[in-house]
Amino acid sequence: MNAALTPIIGQQGVVALYRRSLHLCASTHPRLAGTYDSVQAALDLIALNSVLVEQSEVDALFFGEVLLTTFYELLTTLIGPSLTARLLRGVWEPSLSDTPSQENSP
Figure 1 (cartoon, helix red, strand yellow):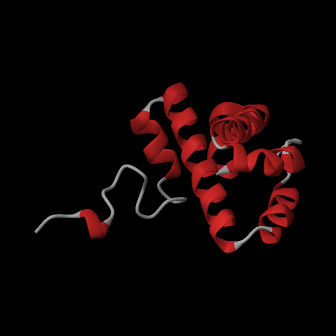
Figure 2: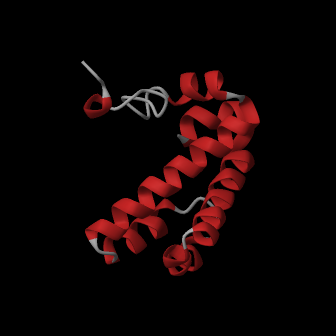
């Protein structure tokens, strides 16, 4: 995501979105507050990874899903859904805008 977004919104923009996403995750989901406190620095994915591996599998998956969804939604508010989907198409397969296969009706 960093590589896809830096040419569009700059490195500082990516870091700002990351930090805002972390903040929103922690404020919306209190059980993530401790995780936020541990990784609130600049785009430090090594710190994020080290915190996630200390969590239970369920908590790590929950935090990752909430963080990525929040990041995607924030980016969408800035540059629109179409451009967001195009820029992050390679990151999410299927993209967040697609209906998961188990939800498709015959």
